[in-house]
Amino acid sequence: MSTAPTTTPAPDPMRDQPRTTTRRRRFVPWQGPATRVDVALMGAILAVVALGLVLRPLKPFLLASHPVALEFLTGDLTAIGAAAAFARIGETPLWLVVVAGAVGMVKLDWLTWWTGRQWGGGIIRMFTTSERAQRFAARATELDPWVIRAAVVLAVLPGVPTAVVYAMAGWARMRLLTFLLLDLAGALLMTGLVAGLGYGLGQRAVDLVLLVDEYASVVSLAMITLAAVIPLIRRRIRRRSRAERRIGTAATEEPPERRRQVLEPDRHGGESPGE
Image 1 (tube, one colour):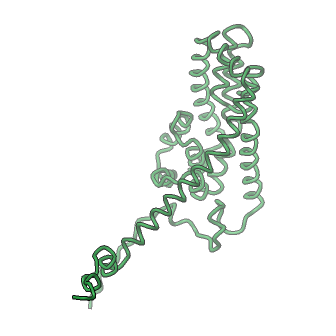
Image 2 (cartoon, helix red, strand yellow):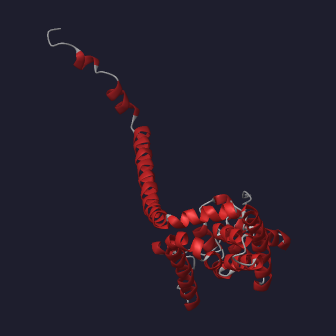
Image 3 (cartoon, rainbow, N blue to C red):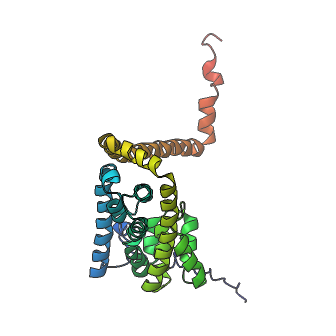
Protein backbone atom coordinates (compact mmCIF):
# COMPACT_ATOMS: atom_id res chain seq x y z
CA MET A 1 0.00 0.00 0.00
CA SER A 2 1.59 3.25 -1.14
CA THR A 3 1.47 6.40 0.89
CA ALA A 4 0.94 9.86 -0.51
CA PRO A 5 4.12 11.91 -0.73
CA THR A 6 4.42 14.61 1.87
CA THR A 7 5.62 18.11 1.06
CA THR A 8 7.86 20.06 3.37
CA PRO A 9 7.01 23.78 3.65
CA ALA A 10 9.67 26.19 2.54
CA PRO A 11 11.79 27.53 5.39
CA ASP A 12 10.82 30.94 6.73
CA PRO A 13 13.48 32.66 8.86
CA MET A 14 10.90 34.76 10.70
CA ARG A 15 8.57 31.81 11.36
CA ASP A 16 11.20 29.22 12.15
CA GLN A 17 12.83 31.17 14.96
CA PRO A 18 12.27 29.53 18.37
CA ARG A 19 9.14 30.69 20.14
CA THR A 20 8.88 31.40 23.83
CA THR A 21 6.13 30.02 25.99
CA THR A 22 5.13 33.00 28.09
CA ARG A 23 2.84 35.71 26.80
CA ARG A 24 5.05 38.55 27.94
CA ARG A 25 7.81 37.36 25.62
CA ARG A 26 5.87 38.89 22.75
CA PHE A 27 7.03 42.29 24.00
CA VAL A 28 10.75 41.51 24.05
CA PRO A 29 12.96 40.68 21.04
CA TRP A 30 15.07 37.92 22.57
CA GLN A 31 14.30 34.22 22.90
CA GLY A 32 14.64 32.40 26.19
CA PRO A 33 16.04 33.96 29.37
CA ALA A 34 17.49 37.45 28.97
CA THR A 35 21.25 37.72 29.14
CA ARG A 36 23.23 40.68 30.43
CA VAL A 37 23.83 41.78 26.86
CA ASP A 38 20.09 41.70 26.16
CA VAL A 39 19.30 43.82 29.21
CA ALA A 40 22.12 46.29 28.54
CA LEU A 41 21.19 46.70 24.88
CA MET A 42 17.50 47.15 25.62
CA GLY A 43 18.39 49.70 28.31
CA ALA A 44 20.47 51.64 25.80
CA ILE A 45 17.62 51.66 23.26
CA LEU A 46 15.16 52.91 25.89
CA ALA A 47 17.65 55.60 26.94
CA VAL A 48 17.89 56.82 23.34
CA VAL A 49 14.10 56.98 23.11
CA ALA A 50 13.92 58.88 26.41
CA LEU A 51 16.57 61.34 25.20
CA GLY A 52 14.53 62.02 22.07
CA LEU A 53 11.41 62.68 24.13
CA VAL A 54 13.30 65.08 26.41
CA LEU A 55 14.83 67.00 23.49
CA ARG A 56 11.60 67.30 21.52
CA PRO A 57 10.08 70.23 23.46
CA LEU A 58 13.49 71.95 23.58
CA LYS A 59 13.93 72.08 19.80
CA PRO A 60 12.10 75.40 19.26
CA PHE A 61 14.31 77.07 21.89
CA LEU A 62 17.60 75.73 20.48
CA LEU A 63 16.74 76.18 16.82
CA ALA A 64 17.66 79.87 16.68
CA SER A 65 20.23 80.10 19.46
CA HIS A 66 22.25 76.88 19.00
CA PRO A 67 21.30 75.23 15.69
CA VAL A 68 24.65 73.43 15.28
CA ALA A 69 24.41 71.92 18.75
CA LEU A 70 20.81 70.91 18.06
CA GLU A 71 21.69 69.14 14.82
CA PHE A 72 24.53 67.31 16.57
CA LEU A 73 22.23 66.19 19.39
CA THR A 74 19.27 65.16 17.26
CA GLY A 75 20.40 64.90 13.62
CA ASP A 76 17.19 66.78 12.82
CA LEU A 77 16.91 67.95 9.21
CA THR A 78 15.17 71.16 10.26
CA ALA A 79 18.11 72.03 12.50
CA ILE A 80 20.53 71.29 9.65
CA GLY A 81 18.66 73.63 7.31
CA ALA A 82 18.50 76.34 9.98
CA ALA A 83 22.23 76.06 10.73
CA ALA A 84 23.04 76.28 7.02
CA ALA A 85 20.92 79.43 6.75
CA PHE A 86 22.94 80.98 9.56
CA ALA A 87 26.11 79.91 7.75
CA ARG A 88 24.93 81.92 4.73
CA ILE A 89 24.97 85.13 6.77
CA GLY A 90 28.36 84.31 8.31
CA GLU A 91 27.28 83.07 11.73
CA THR A 92 28.95 79.64 11.45
CA PRO A 93 31.15 77.75 8.95
CA LEU A 94 29.22 75.67 6.42
CA TRP A 95 31.58 72.70 6.79
CA LEU A 96 30.80 72.57 10.50
CA VAL A 97 27.09 72.47 9.70
CA VAL A 98 27.55 69.48 7.38
CA VAL A 99 29.87 67.58 9.73
CA ALA A 100 27.73 68.19 12.83
CA GLY A 101 24.58 67.18 10.97
CA ALA A 102 26.07 63.98 9.57
CA VAL A 103 27.55 62.94 12.90
CA GLY A 104 24.29 63.77 14.64
CA MET A 105 22.38 61.51 12.25
CA VAL A 106 24.66 58.48 12.61
CA LYS A 107 26.07 58.71 16.15
CA LEU A 108 23.67 56.12 17.64
CA ASP A 109 22.84 54.01 14.57
CA TRP A 110 25.33 51.35 15.65
CA LEU A 111 22.90 50.43 18.43
CA THR A 112 20.25 49.57 15.86
CA TRP A 113 22.80 47.55 13.88
CA TRP A 114 23.66 45.72 17.09
CA THR A 115 20.00 44.89 17.82
CA GLY A 116 19.75 43.14 14.46
CA ARG A 117 22.96 41.22 15.09
CA GLN A 118 21.83 40.23 18.58
CA TRP A 119 18.11 39.49 18.08
CA GLY A 120 17.54 39.07 14.34
CA GLY A 121 13.88 38.74 13.44
CA GLY A 122 12.77 39.43 17.01
CA ILE A 123 13.69 43.12 16.81
CA ILE A 124 12.33 43.39 13.25
CA ARG A 125 8.89 42.41 14.53
CA MET A 126 9.13 45.15 17.15
CA PHE A 127 10.28 47.79 14.68
CA THR A 128 7.50 47.22 12.15
CA THR A 129 4.14 45.49 11.83
CA SER A 130 4.28 45.50 8.03
CA GLU A 131 4.34 41.92 6.78
CA ARG A 132 6.00 43.06 3.57
CA ALA A 133 8.88 44.70 5.48
CA GLN A 134 9.23 41.64 7.71
CA ARG A 135 9.40 39.28 4.73
CA PHE A 136 12.02 41.46 3.06
CA ALA A 137 14.08 41.64 6.27
CA ALA A 138 13.82 37.86 6.69
CA ARG A 139 15.77 37.48 3.44
CA ALA A 140 18.67 39.54 4.83
CA THR A 141 21.02 36.56 4.99
CA GLU A 142 20.12 35.51 1.45
CA LEU A 143 20.35 38.85 -0.36
CA ASP A 144 23.36 40.02 -2.31
CA PRO A 145 25.58 42.02 0.09
CA TRP A 146 25.56 44.93 -2.34
CA VAL A 147 21.78 45.17 -2.03
CA ILE A 148 22.04 45.56 1.73
CA ARG A 149 24.88 48.05 1.38
CA ALA A 150 22.82 50.16 -1.00
CA ALA A 151 19.85 49.95 1.37
CA VAL A 152 21.99 51.26 4.25
CA VAL A 153 23.12 54.25 2.18
CA LEU A 154 19.56 55.05 1.06
CA ALA A 155 17.95 54.42 4.46
CA VAL A 156 18.02 58.15 5.28
CA LEU A 157 15.52 58.91 2.50
CA PRO A 158 11.97 59.81 3.58
CA GLY A 159 9.61 56.84 3.64
CA VAL A 160 12.33 54.21 4.16
CA PRO A 161 12.02 52.23 7.44
CA THR A 162 15.48 53.23 8.65
CA ALA A 163 15.53 51.12 11.82
CA VAL A 164 14.48 48.01 9.89
CA VAL A 165 17.26 48.50 7.32
CA TYR A 166 19.94 49.01 9.98
CA ALA A 167 18.76 45.99 11.99
CA MET A 168 18.67 43.96 8.78
CA ALA A 169 22.31 44.88 8.14
CA GLY A 170 23.24 43.57 11.57
CA TRP A 171 21.19 40.41 11.04
CA ALA A 172 23.05 39.83 7.76
CA ARG A 173 26.35 39.97 9.69
CA MET A 174 27.60 43.11 7.97
CA ARG A 175 30.80 44.27 9.66
CA LEU A 176 30.40 47.25 11.96
CA LEU A 177 33.07 49.32 10.22
CA THR A 178 31.43 48.72 6.83
CA PHE A 179 28.04 49.66 8.25
CA LEU A 180 29.36 52.88 9.82
CA LEU A 181 31.07 53.98 6.61
CA LEU A 182 27.98 53.34 4.50
CA ASP A 183 25.74 54.98 7.09
CA LEU A 184 28.00 58.05 7.18
CA ALA A 185 28.01 58.26 3.38
CA GLY A 186 24.21 58.34 3.28
CA ALA A 187 24.08 60.89 6.09
CA LEU A 188 26.59 63.16 4.32
CA LEU A 189 24.50 63.04 1.14
CA MET A 190 21.30 63.96 2.96
CA THR A 191 23.00 66.59 5.14
CA GLY A 192 24.65 68.16 2.11
CA LEU A 193 21.33 68.34 0.27
CA VAL A 194 19.45 69.93 3.17
CA ALA A 195 22.33 72.25 4.04
CA GLY A 196 22.49 73.38 0.41
CA LEU A 197 18.81 74.27 0.47
CA GLY A 198 19.16 76.16 3.74
CA TYR A 199 22.27 77.96 2.53
CA GLY A 200 20.47 78.96 -0.65
CA LEU A 201 17.53 80.45 1.25
CA GLY A 202 19.85 82.40 3.53
CA GLN A 203 18.26 85.38 5.27
CA ARG A 204 14.71 84.28 4.49
CA ALA A 205 15.26 81.01 6.31
CA VAL A 206 16.91 82.85 9.21
CA ASP A 207 13.88 85.13 9.52
CA LEU A 208 11.63 82.10 9.68
CA VAL A 209 13.81 80.48 12.34
CA LEU A 210 13.79 83.67 14.41
CA LEU A 211 10.01 83.77 14.12
CA VAL A 212 9.83 80.23 15.47
CA ASP A 213 12.15 81.27 18.29
CA GLU A 214 9.87 84.18 19.14
CA TYR A 215 6.96 81.81 19.67
CA ALA A 216 9.09 78.95 21.01
CA SER A 217 6.99 78.49 24.15
CA VAL A 218 3.77 78.17 22.17
CA VAL A 219 5.37 75.79 19.68
CA SER A 220 6.84 73.65 22.47
CA LEU A 221 3.52 73.43 24.32
CA ALA A 222 1.75 72.55 21.07
CA MET A 223 4.25 69.76 20.38
CA ILE A 224 3.81 68.35 23.90
CA THR A 225 0.02 68.50 23.58
CA LEU A 226 0.04 66.77 20.20
CA ALA A 227 2.40 64.09 21.50
CA ALA A 228 -0.06 63.37 24.33
CA VAL A 229 -3.34 63.69 22.41
CA ILE A 230 -2.56 61.85 19.16
CA PRO A 231 -1.99 58.44 20.84
CA LEU A 232 -5.28 58.84 22.73
CA ILE A 233 -7.14 59.60 19.50
CA ARG A 234 -5.57 56.61 17.75
CA ARG A 235 -6.45 54.35 20.68
CA ARG A 236 -10.06 55.54 20.62
CA ILE A 237 -10.30 54.95 16.87
CA ARG A 238 -8.90 51.43 17.27
CA ARG A 239 -11.38 50.65 20.04
CA ARG A 240 -14.29 51.89 17.93
CA SER A 241 -13.18 49.86 14.92
CA ARG A 242 -12.81 46.73 17.07
CA ALA A 243 -16.29 47.27 18.50
CA GLU A 244 -17.76 47.66 15.01
CA ARG A 245 -16.02 44.48 13.85
CA ARG A 246 -17.39 42.57 16.84
CA ILE A 247 -20.91 43.78 16.06
CA GLY A 248 -20.54 42.80 12.41
CA THR A 249 -19.18 39.37 13.35
CA ALA A 250 -22.04 38.76 15.78
CA ALA A 251 -24.57 39.72 13.12
CA THR A 252 -23.11 37.36 10.53
CA GLU A 253 -22.88 34.46 12.98
CA GLU A 254 -26.52 34.79 14.11
CA PRO A 255 -28.67 31.80 12.97
CA PRO A 256 -30.82 32.47 9.87
CA GLU A 257 -33.98 31.43 11.74
CA ARG A 258 -33.32 34.08 14.37
CA ARG A 259 -32.68 36.78 11.75
CA ARG A 260 -35.95 35.91 10.00
CA GLN A 261 -37.85 36.19 13.27
CA VAL A 262 -36.39 39.63 13.86
CA LEU A 263 -36.76 40.96 10.32
CA GLU A 264 -40.17 39.47 9.42
CA PRO A 265 -43.36 39.94 11.49
CA ASP A 266 -44.93 36.85 13.01
CA ARG A 267 -47.96 36.11 10.83
CA HIS A 268 -49.80 34.19 13.53
CA GLY A 269 -48.98 36.66 16.25
CA GLY A 270 -50.07 39.55 14.03
CA GLU A 271 -53.69 38.32 13.66
CA SER A 272 -56.31 39.96 15.81
CA PRO A 273 -57.95 37.84 18.57
CA GLY A 274 -61.39 38.13 17.02
CA GLU A 275 -60.48 36.43 13.76
